[in-house]
Length: 184
Image 1 (spheres, rainbow, N blue to C red):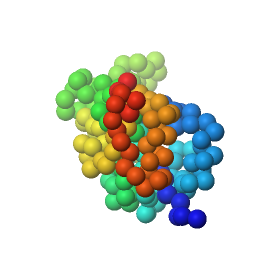
Image 2: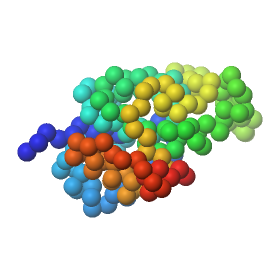
Image 3: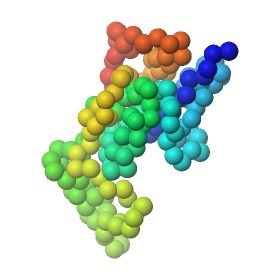
Image 4: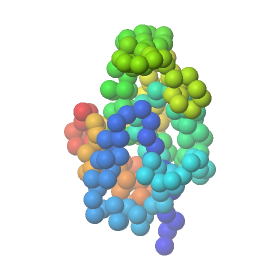
């Protein structure tokens, strides 16, 4: 039996729709489980990103300082990094706050925690409550090198399966045609 692929999935700034689409692999998840070892994921209780990961799927955009640190750790510890879904690929919906202020996320924090508050309007400031936001939301490749992009909001399950199947077989996925490249 060949060595199982060490797979990680990560959820940054986004809606988790890409992970929901991943779960839409339905029965093929059993075949996937036989071929990979899931070493890190929002659906697994693992607190620290591990070393020696073969493939990491990153869903979501880089929106706060914790994301910055995590994606740098992922790049150091992963052989292949995959931007998984339109937020990771382009910033998509998560980056909609960027035009509000080119240099700061304060306008978003003020709107959410002060302007919309009924009682005691204030931005939470205790450590660990709200991670410090980066000034501008970024797609993953703006911060680290990315090896493969899987577009879609979310990517459809057949596209995810085609990519994972190729990787399991030691091949580079062919991202050609609308079935593999369509955004949205």
